[in-house]
Length: 169
Figure 1 (cartoon, rainbow, N blue to C red):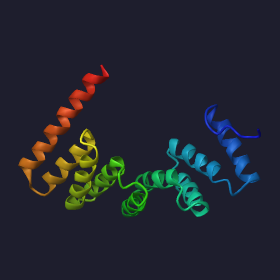
Figure 2: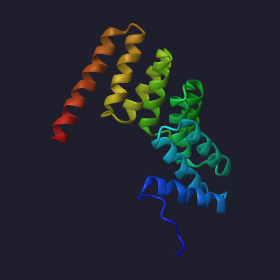
Figure 3: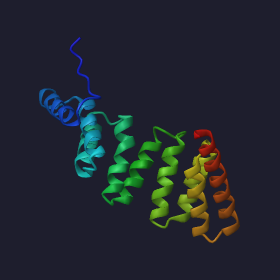
Figure 4: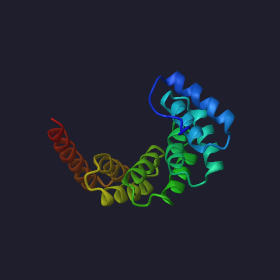
């Protein structure tokens, strides 16, 4: 059928195959995205970001490029841009607790505790079993001096984390 398998196989071989694919068809957003993933997996953040940006130029609503772009920005230390990228992603994923949790983490990192609290609350409202969401909420509350509420969030995280481990084993 002429389709090219983009997943699996040797990483170097995949990289070479994808490079060839984008040279043949520079408008192939899927191939550019896959190249971005390869660079991301290799912690080549500038390259992954460049590829995700190109995908978004080709397809502005490409969900997976929108979803992976903030990670590249975060790892490049461009936290304000990463927050903006998560905000853009939320236009497509309002009900995704992981996006809210990840943006909460960036707000925590920057000391924006009220914003971190709001995002973490949304994450745990959407998914009450979100251990990291409860933990981020606890840290955001603690950062605002709300110790009793922070401790409740940490207890929720610990209880959820403990039950998750029990289910695993």
